Amino acid sequence: MSYGYSNRFAGFGQPVARDEARSRVAFLRKVYGLFFGGVMVATVGALVALNLGAESSRLVVGGGVARVPPLVAWVAQHFIISLIVYFGAGFAVNAVRRTPGVNIAALFGFTFISGVYIAPLLFLAGVLASGGQTLSGNPVRDAFLLSSAAFGGLTGYAVITKRDFSFLRGFLSMGFFVLLGAMLIGMFIGSSVFHLAIASVGVLLFGAYVLYDTSRLLRTEDRSDAVGAALSLYLNFLNLFMFILQILMSSRSRD
Image (cartoon, rainbow, N blue to C red; front, side, top):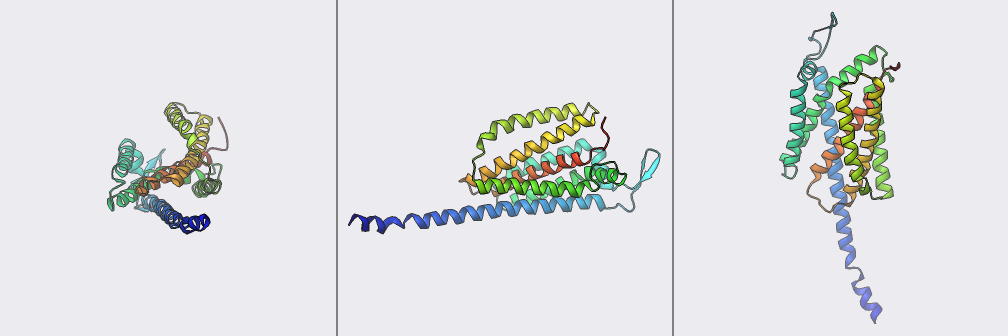
């Protein structure tokens, strides 16, 4: 009699569990859909900056004339303004990330701006590669492939193992400020070895951020902040890409 009673109510929790699983999967699909969309929009932003007006551009460099896209030249020459716009757009996304409609537009607006913002680095990588001065023959392409592989591999590891990487939080916070301090020091140090070391640490740090944010994403009960989660993943990917690119841009000779 007791068995029949317990069996009668045993299935009550199953629909709830299935609904929870569906809700989580739908949330993850939305987050990663926004993330991949952001990467594509950033690519468009970079391509616009690198190609808009490129054929008619002229810039005197070292006594010679070079073709530098106008938007790339403007971002490089007005670095402080560009930096303010980039961070301002990032803060704007964070401020409206829970506002339906506006949050998605803000996210894609930010990713487009980030593509334009990194365009001078992409342009420089191409120039150095054309002169055979980089470790990779095509550093932009190879950095994108490597960062995609690293991001995908780390995400897959976090999903498959289901490990909780929340213990990394303190290490990541400390590592971020150490890296930021090293980058500020690097502005006054011309050693390529020092800059290569910073880039290597940056790759490790943001690889750890991928594990931490993916683990947190899999465990969160808050399904109302898909844009905020996608923004975190995008920034991890963007930083991975930029630090790997800096490594591949390194000269074959070391000072």
